[in-house]
Length: 275
Ligand SMILES: [Mn+2]
Image 1 (cartoon, protein in one colour):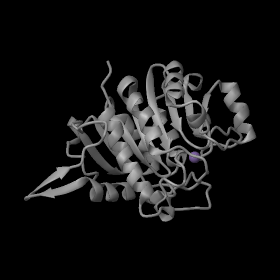
Image 2 (cartoon, protein in one colour):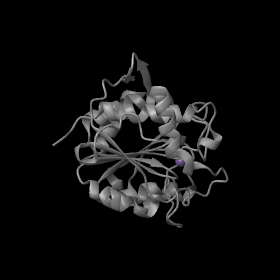
Image 3 (cartoon, rainbow, N blue to C red):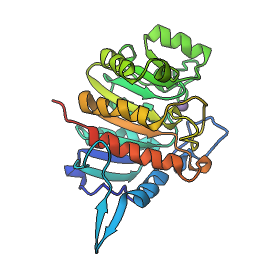
Image 4 (tube, helix red, strand yellow):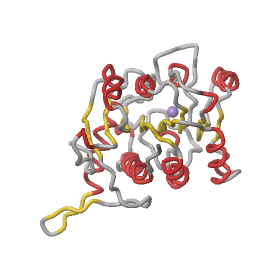
């Protein structure tokens, strides 16, 4: 099954959706996130297509009409994702996980980028490598120009690494204490050049996104993320993004899949090409 808006052939596409149904980098007891990519496609197919007198209509989103050309590459092996993204050159990969360690594979193609990383966890462990807790230690990105958003469960080792790398952190509480304009100003100040956006669905409160491998209370909501993502995709130089850690086994009423599918469309619809 393909993502419903993905009607463009690969050569013409601006956005290329690629699923990586792999959880070998996860250490969660809550297994099942390898089923994430197909759960997003299935729910998008249900929620976004309306039959209209022998023809079909696609839902649009609050960010506007979805006129961008999208291709769905299908699912690929984790070992091959880096190569597949490399060949896309200039197109924007939209990677669906799978566990978060897949992001480090994708980032092998984007060595000089800065990251906007939405997650409850900092994923900057350096005493272990190649798993979902070491993503930002494994990737060769510009951490001093990067920012993590929605953090609320760091390990002591991670707090030290954050300081050492001058990584900026927006804690989830700050959404309530300081507001969205303040957070957007910090993102704009910190991030420079080419930007990759990575979203662990556990950044959202478990009330809105129960279907994740490592839920943490006190997360953000959809509209808070949307406020920032609309601006990020409109104003910054986006080179790729991903949505990770959907775990359909723990989802309720496909709530998390619905959230993920809508989020992808909002990001694509908000995107403005930069030179
Ligand atoms: Mn996480």
